[in-house]
Image 1 (spheres, rainbow, N blue to C red):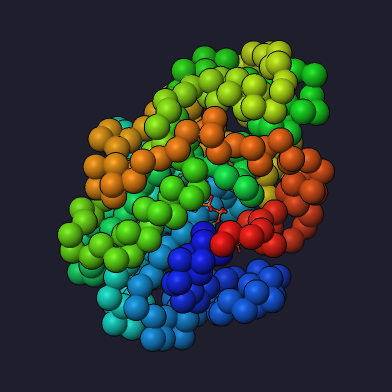
Image 2: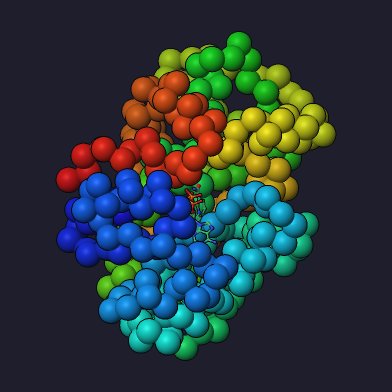
Amino acid sequence: MVARLRAAGVTVRCLVRNPYAARRLRAQSIEAMFGDLTAPDTLQAALDRVGTVLNLSTIIREHERGDFRRVLHDGVRNLLRAAAAAGVARFVQIGALGDAAARGNPRHSYLYWKEKGAALVDASDLDATVIETSVVFGPGDQHFTAIALTLKWLPCFFIPDGAACTTIFQPIHVDDVVACVLRALDGGGELPRRVPVAGPERLTYEGIVRTIASLIGRTPRFVRVSPRITRAALRGIGAAMRYEPVTEPLMDLVGVDSIAEPNGIADVFGITPRPLTERAAYLQAVGLPELAAWVRKRPRHGIFVVDQDVS
Ligand SMILES: NC(=O)c1ccc[n+]([C@@H]2O[C@H](COP(=O)([O-])OP(=O)(O)OC[C@H]3O[C@@H](n4cnc5c(N)ncnc54)[C@H](OP(=O)(O)O)[C@@H]3O)[C@@H](O)[C@H]2O)c1
């Protein structure tokens, strides 16, 4: 996102919470300031002379009980307050899709707290928009890379039985999300407070796996496993990796369709999203570096694409 915003001529300052991320950004002449959404005192300096805030922060696992509330709700509240105090003109946030019942159900803890955070943005006095997206793919992604690696390296593909097979997604390419963000940064009061955006294809999880398999020349041999075994496996993966691509809270979203109805990408932003089949060539090349990045004990978001030419 940062590289693409800069390629579009946007001057970017990043709020980071670890020295490794700061070093990587500064090596590319990108301004990085330390801060943490859960520590309000760290936000004011980072917002000095900032015109627009783009909140991309999220977590998909709790290391301690209450982390979802602390980051996805309290963190947004802290950021909104700091933005208002700093005189920020525009506030754009990325959110997640899911039906109203799921958003209101604490059992879906990730989505529940994302919704609570988005509601704070709705209620704020700032000129603000929340872009709610389906699952995002593109170089450096988590889920699609994990599926491709599993298809490449394992003799069979373990898929949770039941609703997981029928839950529907509309994968959206990161470039299309960036295009929406660029318009939202300018859009101001013309835009709705919430804009759901998604790609052009509706695919079940199994359909996504089949699509990726055919793109990378594999034939998936599915083995259905019970949700209980899937959860145990995810706990094992979580213990082995510091930044695992799939987590139990995401598993809790099984059965919650991630679809945009209506799809604001065309209706609101006037963008024609491109399908997975046209934009997934990068998955042919994923391999050990991606696995290593998940296992290494240091922050590594976007690490795979740091040197990528996006001009
Ligand atoms: N990826 C998808 O498929 C998808 C789908 C729907 C919606 N979204 C939304 O799109 C946005 C971007 O997602 P992503 O996949 O790019 O996420 P990501 O790679 O996991 O990045 C999230 C970022 O948030 C930062 N962060 C977490 N807690 C923070 C805190 N307390 N203070 C400051 N920063 C904090 C992380 O910092 P560290 O590097 O220090 O951990 C990380 O850089 C999120 O709002 C997400 O909910 C993504």
